[in-house]
Image (cartoon, rainbow, N blue to C red; front, side, top):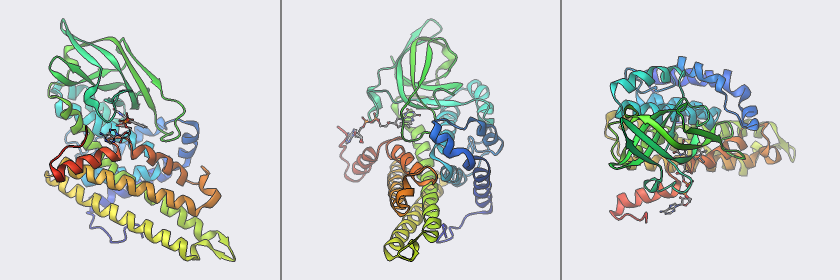
Length: 380
Ligand SMILES: Cc1cc2nc3c(=O)[nH]c(=O)nc-3n(C[C@H](O)[C@H](O)[C@H](O)COP(=O)(O)OP(=O)(O)OC[C@H]3O[C@@H](n4cnc5c(N)ncnc54)[C@H](O)[C@@H]3O)c2cc1C
């Protein structure tokens, strides 16, 4: 039912999807609602993610080197469990391993990537600052050359994995413009504080980072980084995973509401038998099918090496918005029970409020597409 048009997945794609789904159902779903309620990330799942090849899945040599379609399906199945699981893998794979692989030296790659692929080292990505979110070029974090290294001062906000990370990709202004650094989090001057009172992405660690006269060696610079474009390339990788991941959240909402509606009688028959409820199901199924077709095509174009960043913006924007709408609709079908953590829908719905905001807000991707169509930038 949830592959309504039976997308032409390869044997490898089916195997990756099935393996990830079975693992999520067996090991993540039993505890994820408790983690969400407690505001904790299930760290105990990380080693198995490494063993299953879910970390850096599409990276040659250090990761499993799978096609991007497989990485997409991994994201879908993780987020069918919880957005926190997919966010962890997105940050590890697309926002930390990818920049080291793409912009780093051989020494940096050998030092970090094997351990990261196994989940023995955890990464985070520090771009956003409290006063500079949608416009990260305005960042105030500075890296100043000093002797045979650099001194970094500044702070970052809303950083996924910040408190549990062993290493951090830090974007900072230097005399040569914005550059990326890979920094061990036990470096003197680095501190992380957990962001409390979140009502979304609760099964994910989000942190505020501070760098106070933090001295790092010359070798911390990622030499291939040049300007904000390097950071945006990483985000583009992660957005690809989001366009897939949110399909999983939407699937979970449709599945949960369908099961509920068939078993819940009102006015003498199951609520699934009312036309208004069936119209909701038809709309949800249509949305999910459109999301799948878009994500599948996105993966094929990415695997062919011809994907434009504007196409990723389109897919992230469209699929995140569609998934949020599915979640909101599914929630109504559960009535009062729809607001309870006993069912997964409100958890997904709350998570998707983050997804529509992070990795470029819905509005910013609207402007990306507007610029692509008109040739006129409307950001400022
Ligand atoms: C749970 C969570 C995890 C995150 N993880 C990370 C992470 O790991 N690393 C990281 O670096 N960041 C991370 N982020 C930050 C995220 O990417 C930012 O929140 C996002 O980019 C938006 O920035 P902002 O919150 O400062 O909002 P703002 O930029 O202040 O935007 C507020 C509103 O104004 C709108 N707006 C802004 N500019 C314009 C414009 N020109 N035209 C029209 N509307 C505009 C926005 O669309 C939005 O609706 C995370 C965020 C959350 C919530």
